[in-house]
Image (cartoon, rainbow, N blue to C red):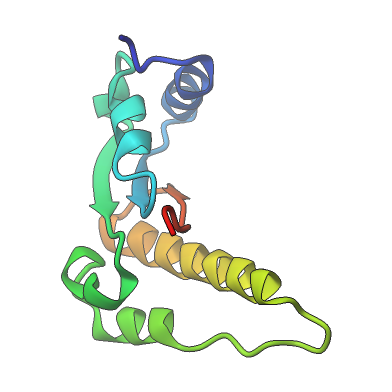
Length: 122
């Protein structure tokens, strides 16, 4: 079974062409994004590593061991008028991935971050 796929081929080739580097921060994908990226020939020229942090509440050490970042990730998201619980959850995950991606780009000195934050199971 190959984990290679056209989107990851394009990502690696595009980063190589531009002379850029990336990191990956995963939650419920559990390493599949990083694995798929590393399956591409030449990925070591553009991929600097990353982290898998499924349980945000316990993931400080996996998220750069950064107290400020970790506390920001744990801040509650306030419901806006008319928002469903699902809308609030989605907005919380968008915030999580944005903050985490920026922090990893800065700390790892890379140009791009692929970040996902979600939930799986019940």
